[in-house]
Length: 444
Ligand code: EPU
Image 1 (tube, rainbow, N blue to C red):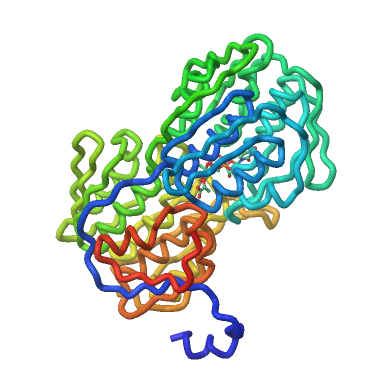
Image 2: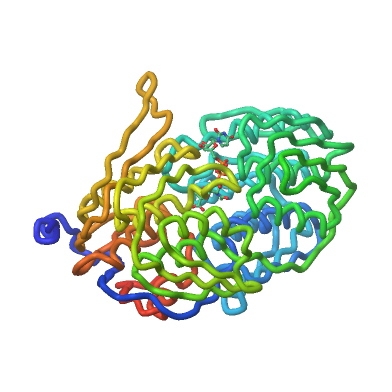
């Protein structure tokens, strides 16, 4: 297919690719890495104290290195030990309350530096965060919360300037239980005077863990895991040493890969309650799942049944596993319906799956030219074949790799940097389970 025709448009320099040769069954055991979306927020939390914070089990990812640069720009001493997976931060003094736009753009998580900076310094100037192109991704919920805490918020193009001095506790109603929005406001409120109540807060496991970490640093937060969080402001927070929890999204991605290839794997360092939204659906497809302490064993069944999923905030089905799960659904018998209800543009990657022979019909519901929701029907099973495809975003990249694992022939994945942003040692881990994946230019 497209490879011969692509050669005419290929740049002269060799583009980095993942080459996935399909047909192997995954078997064996791997240890799940620390959670990206927990580690990045914990790194931002280090700005709340002048004492040292030591984070262990930090996944060595491009996004972690970007966050380290952002902390340094504010004046923190940051040491990253790639071998030990440890990040040590000491923000003894904050030397500036702004940083160049280029430091905010690589990740979405950069926005969560704003809350701690505002809490500690009474002002911050930051740029709209980057991250994956999966929808509009405004930060109005964060900014309204800062205003409720007494900050003045001004916009200059894509720069946001928040000022106002010491924050004051308040009741904040969040229109939507934004994951990073809750984290930002939680951190901002820890050092505010008096009591803050956040209503309609996110209950994502990474938010809960961040709250627990803040409590270990001396914060007084209650209600974690529920939609109502209460924060009694304290004068100061202190240093801490902690261990980043395992990445449920990495675990989920490998679990889906095992099922897709007809295999059986054991994942070490898994929290069962965090996996439930996925494992329920894997069992509906026909797989078998067992938990024992922090281990999870996943075995493919003899057939794959179609199932419907809709993504929702935790404990709903995670939007971050929607794309990998759709790869599996291409192999299921019948028609599966997928409703993406968190991001309005997170089904774009399905165009790439079509290039591999998938039968996916996407429906877009628009209003005045704007997309409001997306849903898709996945017709299966389809025999996939190798093709040259783009990664689109972190999770879509994994979807394409999973599809490649069951496709006939070789799949070439472009924009491999998306994988470096979210999955530690991804290729090595897959190959240790029996996959045949080659990275033409490993970066990390
Ligand atoms: N939203 C608003 N206004 C806001 C904030 C969010 O309208 O002020 C909307 C967004 O546009 C989106 C929805 O609310 O449609 C969900 O956004 P949320 O704020 O909950 O997501 P996020 O905090 O930007 C984090 C993760 C994402 C993950 C989501 C959902 C980080 C750095 N990112 O994003 O992770 O998909 O929560 O759990 O924690 C990834 O890791 O690949 C990734 C995209």
